[in-house]
Image (cartoon, rainbow, N blue to C red; front, side, top):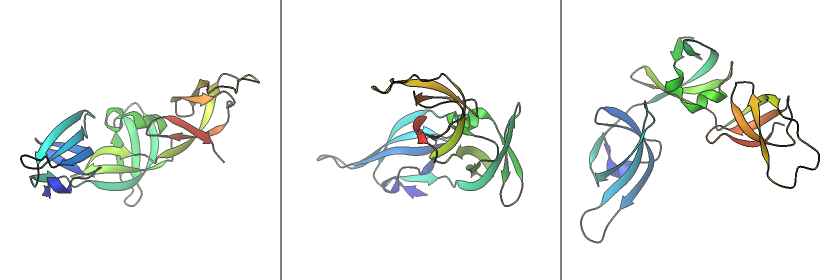
Length: 186
């Protein structure tokens, strides 16, 4: 059990029989009345968000989430296949369970797989990944005056916006949280 006063970003709790992760929280102490905690929660399985208010000191059930390092082996019609780095046990996750970060998974990448009661509930990618561009339109000399971008297809099949000077074959760094181009890989 956890008190609503101890809620922090990233804490996973059980509300109405479902797993929710705290995205934002705010302790409010009005001049009149009792204190409360206003939160924004994200459903672990569906990805939907919910705003919920808890009384100060209210007891909540904390979900025990275990993070295990696993290596992504391959992706096929059945889903994404991962291997536990310590037990060599294989786990298959569907794309809808992983969500948008699946666009940046490539074979051999080591990620943290989140488990609750032994069942995989999600994948936590690193904040930045380095991927090769397989196809993009050529840039033209002199087109650097403004922040103009063009689409680029990556080796994983994802498409991101890159500056005009980036060419096919370049390896670039991408922020996996907001799909933003960060620069060329050194």
